[in-house]
Image (cartoon, rainbow, N blue to C red; front, side, top):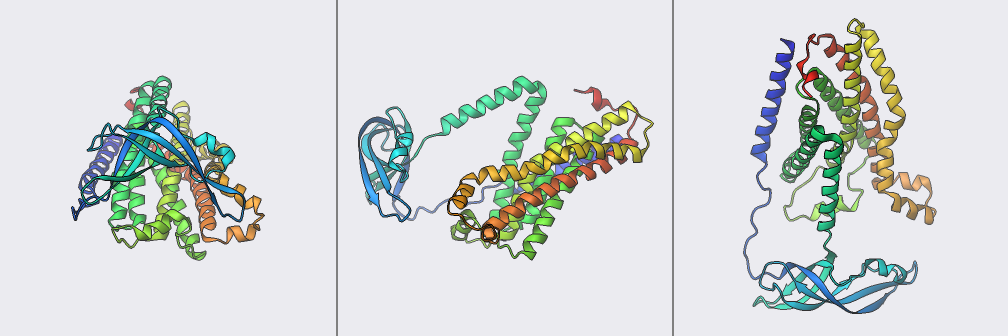
Length: 394
């Protein structure tokens, strides 16, 4: 009877989550008004020849910086009025130092993304390349990732790919659209994180108490991380505007008044979610295995055993998010060390303080996932039926 109630509760949760998803997955942006002639269009091209280079000196107090411009002949390959036309255009090599420019120069056969400027009659007046087309190489990496995970994980690898796809869709079609509509990012992030947790762990482990314990542990740890970040962020008077991307949100055309501190909260929840699910699922699986091996174990001893397992995870888990954020900020760390910026100046700036809060609050959330999962698994496994059919349905 207990397993039946759990299945019904999980199915109800999934139904509500998917229903809300369907209601809010409509496009955020209205169609652009055709108020006149298009001033510019995007196009995709293929480099035919390199015609030459031009160097523009730029005054820069920190060194001899040169803007390297590459002149190339490009054939437009994207659909549109200019398809198959061959044009001469330029590619700014991102103001690279001359000795490093070779690494980013275009070669014949490279595909590029361009902007073509038009006059009032729609004729081309100028063009420039703004990026190398990298999507094919990223797609290749995605294919390799899928092949590897399927080869190693087989059917469970397939379920992992499905859960990953659903996670990405939830972020793109639920989290981002709702925040752009002005909904509180704190509420949205909690809702999406719980939904992603439920869907992912259900796909991985099925309808059982082990999954429920992992969902409880993940949700508790992630929400604890976010609440702690909110508390410390308020005491430290963090604005949530410490990075360039947050500041750019002030100028988007939708004229939305964001809760920037809430966006910081949402980012912490999303950032900690994956690691928290890993910890919770590992803890829950271990504890249910203990119960299967020793059905007569007392609840208190069972929870202590789970905590002993969790303590072995703490050393590595506490470093997980800190190392992830440090790796993403390696260039910044090098820059600060090169200019010998005092440590107290670094940590007192809004942006850097936000990253420190993000790292440590997320790590605290991961650590708290351990006792929450241990207690949930201890109580749920104590009521587990003797024959859990999900154990054999693999």
